[in-house]
Amino acid sequence: MKYIDEFRDRDLARGLAAAIAAAADPTRQYRLMEFCGGHTHAIFRYGLADLMPANVRFIHGPGCPVCVLPMARIDHAITLATQHGVTLCTYADLMRVPAGERRSLLKAKAAGADIRMIYSTSDALRIAREDPGRQVVFFAIGFETTTPPTAVAAKVARAEGLKNFSIFCNHVLTPPALRTILATAGPDGVRLDGILGPSHVSTVIGSQPYGFVPERFGKPVVIAGFEPLDVMQSTLMLIRQLNEGRCEVENQYTRAVTAQGNRKAQALMAEVFRPRETFEWRGLGFLPDSALRLADDYADLDAERRFAVTIGEVREVKGCECPAILRGVKEPTDCKLFGTVCTPDNPMGSCMVSSEGACAAYWGYGRFRKVEG
Amino acid sequence: MCLAIPARITAIDPTGQSATVALGAVTRDCSLALIEDAAVGDYVLMHVGYALNRISPEEAQQTLALMREAGVLVDQDGLAPALADTAGPA
Ligand code: SF4
Image: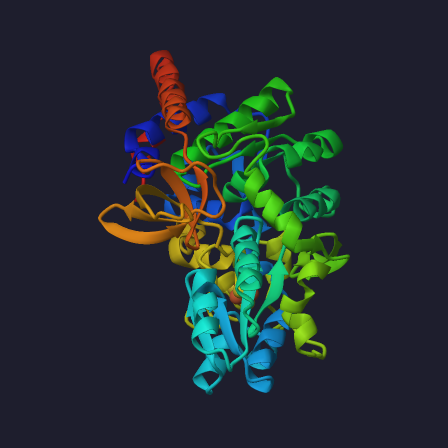
C-alpha cells in the first residue's frame, strides 16, 4: 500500500543499515530511547535491533497508553459497568489488561457486565442514541493522538443533547512523561543519549513542544515515523547529531508532522479538556499536569462526576516489573514471571497485553534473541 | 494504540464532515472533523475512524530520496558491512 510498502523496502533498509554502521563511532555508546510503543513494536517486528552495531541500543520508553494506565482506573471502569449498570464502551486494547484482584474488563463482560468493544467514538455515540434509556460511558484513553476524536464525540453529544452519554476520561500527555524520564535519567535511572520522538502524537501537537529536551536536558530528539525505514533513518539522524555535537529537535517524519501540528485538533482539545493537577502513571507515579479531564463547560459529560465511584487501594501483581520496564531501567527478561507465569495468553501486567508493550514485543518477536546471541 | 494508517479519500459526503477512504482493497468511513480542506485523492493518516492529518506526497518523496542517498553514499565508500544481507522486513 502506498506510504507503507515503500517505507519497508529491503534495499533501502540495507543501505541505511550500512550507513548507520559507518556513522556509529566505535569508541562511544548510543543509547536511544524510543518513547512510543509503536516504535518498540516496529523495532521488534522488523528485527531492527539486530541491524544495529553493538554500541547502538534501543531503550524502550513508556509511550504505550494501555501500559501506563494504573490498575485503579480499570477498576473504576469495571465498577461503573458492574455496580452502576452502565454500558461501557472501550477500545479493544483495554479488554485484557489486568486490574485489581485479577479482574479485567474481559472477565467482567464474561460475568455479564455490558461492556462493548468499539472501533471509534462514533460507535459509542450510536450505542447511546439507540438506547436512550440506558447510560452509556465511553472509557477514553490514549495520548494526544487519540484525544481529539474524544473531543469531537463530546461536541457531538452536546450538539445533539444526548443525555445518556458520558466520558470516563483517561487521556494523558506526552511531554510531561518525557520530562519525567529525562529528569530521573542518569547514574541512578536510565542512561540515555538521545530520543526517538513520538510519531502520530506529533502529527497533532507538532514538533515544537519537544524544545525542552535539548534546551533543558541537553539531549537530541528526532521525531520518527513508525515504519522500519523511518526508525532507521531517525537513528542515523540521532547518531549524526551526537557525532557532530549538535543537540536539537529534528523531524524525520516530515510527510505527516509539521512544527505547529494540527491546529484544528489542538483547538478542539483546548475547548473540551483541561489539564488535571496530577494523574498517576504506571511506573512513573503521580505527574503534575500530565493528563486531561473534561473542562467545566463539559462537566455534565464527565462520568467521574455523574457516577460516584470510590476505589480502594489496588495492589500490583507481585513480581511484575512493568513499572521499571516503563521507565527504561529494566528489560522484560529481567522479570522472573516473563514467559513462565506471564504470557500474552495469561498476562500479569499491562506490558504483556498491548502489542506495543515491551513484554509482548519481546515475547512475540525477540524472546530467543538473547539466548542465541 | 497511537497507530494511524495511510488511507486514500475516495469520496466526501455533502456535509464535508465524513469521507469514504480506501485502505488497499478495503473501504471504510472516516470522519473529517479534525482536518480542513480535504479533497478526493488526498492521502490521510486515519486513527480510530478519524483523519488526523494529510500526508504530504512531496515530503514523502523527499524522505525516500534522503534514504536512498544515505545508502548510496556508503556503498560508494565500500563500507557496506556483511550484516546488510539480513536487512529488510521479516
Ligand atoms: S513479563 Fe509480565 S509480569 Fe513481568 S513485567 Fe512484563 S507484564 Fe509484568
